[in-house]
Amino acid sequence: MVHILVNEDFCKGCGLCRDACPKKIMELTADRMNKKGYHPARCKDESQCIGCCSCAMMCPDTAITVVKDEEGEA
Ligand code: SF4
Ligand code: SF4
Image (cartoon, rainbow, N blue to C red; front, side, top):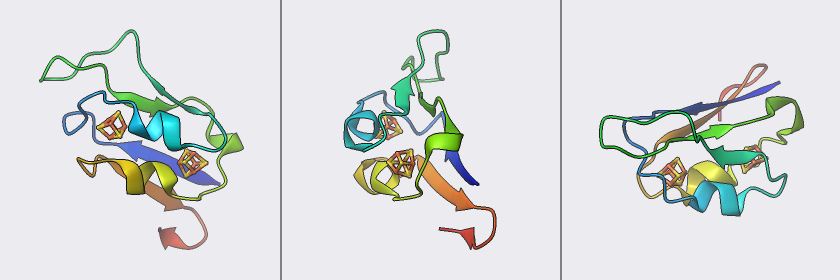
């Protein structure tokens, strides 16, 4: 199982992670707002995640950490 951890206060809601995800499971939250006033990203279905780390690599603010249960932090 892969977990997508988003440091919400680093996120600026740019959507690059959403656009980069091959599984289309990253989204910007409509119902949350961080300290900077942006809607932070989240993974809406971790069960679909293949752990490719594209979202984390694309994030200009290094807000995303991809954690794989068996192998520790990716
Ligand atoms: S690790 Fe890959 S599949 Fe998983 S949310 Fe990020 S971009 Fe999508
Ligand atoms: S790429 Fe980073 S800053 Fe942009 S929406 Fe995704 S988590 Fe937020």
